[in-house]
Image (cartoon, rainbow, N blue to C red):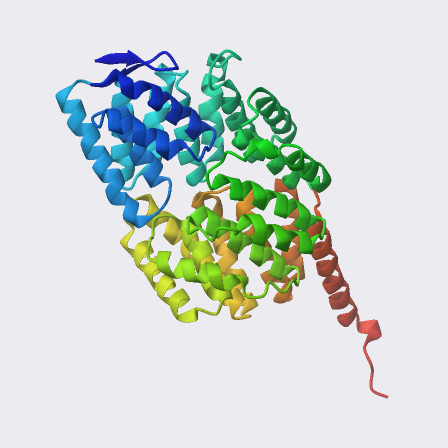
Length: 461
């Protein structure tokens, strides 16, 4: 039978009672709500043959970037395909199933393209918007992310159930494409309309981080605790953003407190949570902060996930944790596994690993060995393509900082200054990290000039 969902589109079900929890599933997913799995479970308990819900289950599991969940996604695809053979699906539902098929075969960009095509015909389907947004984010494709959402913005009025969430997605896409003023305005509007729009809330925090406006960012997050109190593990990431803002101000004691009490309070093993922890500890160490034994907890979890090979962004943070905790045998094993992935070249993962993942991994390990020139060479090679590992500019900034540190430690003052200038242009502000490293590079250049001044050299009598 066909039943209309909350966005006015037909869904194919055998039990109409599955639709109310399905609508809740979608809204919870848009809000990054902790209740999302519960609502999806309720939906499938009412109708296991609900193809669209099965497709969503597949996507949700793939987005977690865990090797053991590939089988779950494949099972969801199989059930959705079985349902389509028993009862014809709508064109919209068919697009979801086809997109999931692409991703299970190793082609997430084709999945996003499939969903983008469907979005043109079904512009008010906010789940389509959010899934495309999520996949493009994983692929490091902010331009496509923004293009997708701006294609359908006019379909969303304040009366649409997902209006605020869509504005939040637009705010993030604007921020990632450098439109910081528009991103701040749009994100604030999203949160005003939809107070539980954690994604829009965090988009505004991104703006303040990128523009070096730490005080405003701290005030923004401190003023909206309800904006992420309902969240799944995404809540840890918002706390991470608060930590970044305090780090820029030099409040390292506050950062460590946030790390222990919020960012890594629960010792979860989701790759995004481990990435939050590893990148924060790395930033702290680059500022000369002794982080104690905090790397060990991350390394223990990373050891169990080091062979996942589902996401290059995750791999690099696992490797960072292993290296900084001196689990060098595991780190070397992981590097060999990444080399094999690159050589096999299967799907998009193989190509991304070869172009950016592998040189970045080699750079991380060289940096850990204090082999800074080699680290610079490898990290610079990765830098040219690093956006494709996914994540945001703020998340990838840890690799930018490592590259700059490698240049400075290798005595490459000119190269460091050029990188600092590039980073400042990207971010839209000369933040405190850039100020301190630019000063260091400038001192190195002056010292070099003095050393090379023939007039200051001693001459034999």
